[in-house]
Structure formats: C-alpha cells, structure tokens
Length: 221
Image (cartoon, rainbow, N blue to C red; front, top):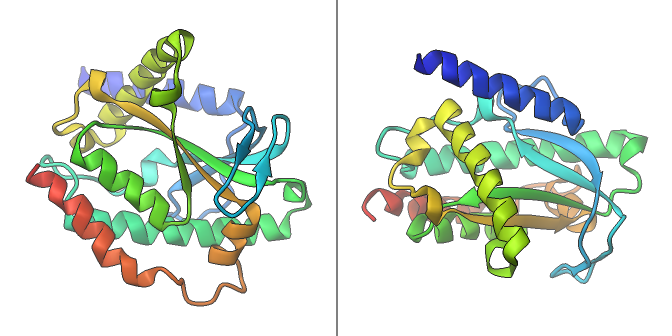
C-alpha cells in the first residue's frame, strides 16, 4: 500500500513539474537540482547590491528528489551533511556551465529556491548551510499574512508528502505544523563568481566540515 501511495506522490510531482516547466539540465546522476526559468514576484535587494524587481527573469531551483542523498532513520548526520554539501557544489558548478552556454539564460538576474524546513536546531543549521553556499535567506513564514499562511499550509502538505515519498528519514523529529518556509536567493553575478568556470577552487571549501558538523548535531537535538 505504501509503495502505491509513494508512486502516486511521484506521479503528482511529475505533473506539477510539467505544468511549471521544470526541466533537467544535465544527465549527471549526481546532480540534485532541476530548474525552471520564471519571473520574480518580489522587490528585493540582495546582499551584494543586486536589485530584483517583479517581472524580472529568474532561474528557479528545485531539488531532484530522486538524486538526493538518502537519510538514515535517525535523520541528518555528519555523513549526510558532507554528501549534501558536496553534491550541492557539484550541481551549482554544472548549472553555471549550462547557463553560460545557453542564450535563454541571458536575461536571468538571479537564482531562487524555496524550502520547507523544520523548527528547532536543524532549521538553523540548514539555513546556515544556504548562507555558506552564498545564498541570501528570506523567512517567508515570518512575513506571511493570513492568505500567506493559508497558502503555506497546502504547500507544506506537498513538501511533507515529497519527503515521505523520497526520503522518509528526513521526517525524523519534524512536526508538520512546525515547518517554516524559506526562499534562498543568489544574484547571477555572485553565482558565477562562486561556481562559474573562472571561480577556480571553491572559496568556501574550508566551511564544509563545519557545515556538516552543524547538520550532524541535529541527531542529538
């Protein structure tokens, strides 16, 4: 029965990806990202001074759920944190090369992803990971009004279903009503500075062990 339900969630996810024109940009089995070109709905100034206005083209980031590293039943640990960080950097470098080679990304001003994260220490650890990867973090839950909270409720149901279907270990010690939604933003300029062909050795490599150790602490939280 559970296998049938997971297959149903996977099918529904595929239909939503088609509707949102979410696509795979590489055949690399280690890539953990899919993408879509969309339009910003925000008026936002990023930490490097880049100003994002509604209607500007952005690259939307989506996790490639089938390629995400599998968590143990105990939730995220040091090993998982290291693997996630390594795959994220690998995927960003691959995406930067793809964007540089495709004219369709010429007007993209920034890259943006959205995540539902649990309350507690693990939330702050994962937000810190996003910052260490070069992203600015926006807490959507804190900014949400009544309509926003209603919208987030249904989005969280979908996020919860995806975690249950693709990576059930990630639900360890997570309360559905404790989920917070975040946006992660990085400007095109900063993205290519960190992950483009001219970036060379990843400048933040030394933070990998610190990030993974921080994630690993959630097992004992």
